[in-house]
Length: 221
Image (tube, rainbow, N blue to C red; front, top):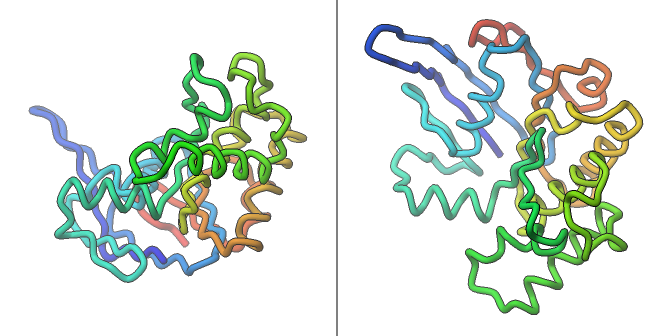
């Protein structure tokens, strides 16, 4: 589902050149749940951003579902992100002035879809994460675990084949973190969703199918 060939990422300023990723070669199978671990600053989030077409590598090739992204223009990259990839962030990134269901609907606004169908899809996504009773609430009225559930519902509302999760349990206690992990595992089993998750938590990572580790921008296993 995701293939990286010889990926390197260099960030340059006038005085400093920083090598964020070096010679990453990785394949993630359809329906696989992969964890990415490593110390802070080792390139984990950069790797996730490149997989999600939010950033481009300095060198190397990215393939999504067998298709090379090298020649993708901005519109094509945005379309693939909207339809194939869902993003889950540690800090939720919900809009406080919108209700839960309106937050979940947001990714569908960029598709040719009636408002009634958007609302139906959003309600179905919220049901999958156990928040059917909170659709009219606002983010400020929810706990951290509930907000992360909303973020997951927003990520899956468009039916993406890939979910990229950056520390999805990082702001949660162990009980809430376990509940979020249960939701992700359920998505893998029921929808054959491919998940790549960045985490610092060994106990969380070991509940995924496979773990890769980064150190100073390189894959070490």
